[in-house]
Image 1: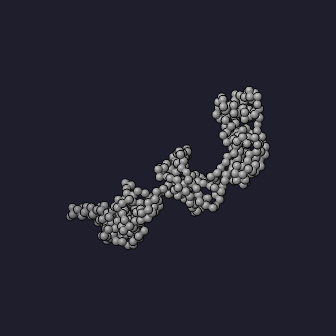
Image 2: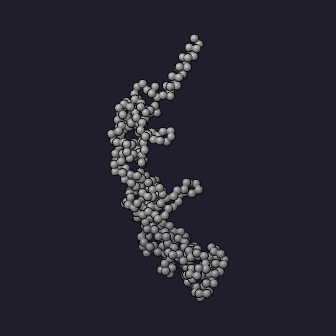
Image 3: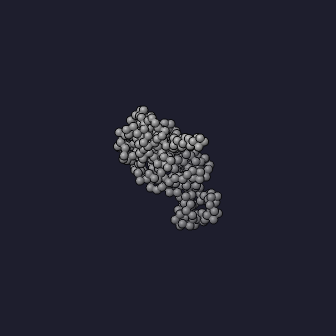
Amino acid sequence: MKKLVCTMLLSAAILAALWFAVPALKTSNPLSVKTISPIQKTVYETAVCSGTLQSAHTARLTIGAPAQITEILVSEGDTVAAGQPILKYRLLSTEEAALQAGGIFTREIAERLRELSDELHNDSLLAAAEYAAASGELPDYFKDFYLPATASAETMRSGILYAPFDGTLTMLAQKSGEIVSGAFISAVVEDCSNIIATLRVPEAYLSQLHTGQTVNITGAAFGSHVFAGRILEIGSHAVTTGGLLTKSETCIEATAAIYTDQTLMSGLTVKGCVFLNEHPHAILIPHAAVTTDADGSEFVYQYVDGIAVRRPVAYTYETDDGVVVSEGFSTADQLIANPPHTLYDGCPVAVEQTDLG
């Protein structure tokens, strides 16, 4: 008798294990499921990137030689007209410049500046600077202090720094009485009526990136508004973003025009969504039908004559709406949406509701 009881208990344990291990034993009635069908639509591959707004026309103004600011004529943020005076300055004599250089360069360089003035018998700062640049006897950064490439002869002579075009004075970097070097950016004028976006596109999209492509521009400053734009220019070299606290990423800088009548502010951070390749008749499986297995592979369950049939999914591209497949599926297929964890390949199912997508 005791042996019989043990045998019965063992049989019950085996049946219980099979109940949990074999799904087929658990499903006596068909599972109620909902289905959804693949969609045929035009799908775009996109590249999402970060960027910054800036003026398409920006002038960074330098005096071109060591000088003392004598009068500030406008305020930062003012609208200026082409040819409007921004500030007045006084060019430093060679002796004064040498004293200033002594605080920036070595004593030897400061002394050499005085010698150049004596040798040339000319107190002109420009003459001394040109001689030093041509002779190559002073360091390259000497040229930045005395002869930046942006300096014009008219600017050097005038004693007044002018706005080169109509725009907004977005930076005024000094006060009256201050001493500035030739390369020092004294003011920045921007044409804020023509704002573009400089986008940093991840390098993986370089082969798909072309001028003329459509781009959507969004940003925290714009709320839910989306600006349409177009890629104007693609950079000729890669740049690396990130730093010690953020992951570095290699990107290509692309410039995009923005179509809007609104006045935008340069310097704002934006996000760009560049529309790369177009797929006009793509078959898209909604995310609700796609399941990921423990090994990372993805699959769907298709409803076929009252049975759930498991099918692998190999997709070529993913969108916000689903995954794009190149073959094997059609809009006539009924795929099980949000499949329950008890579903298995070959499981009897009954369709509760069909959603055509």
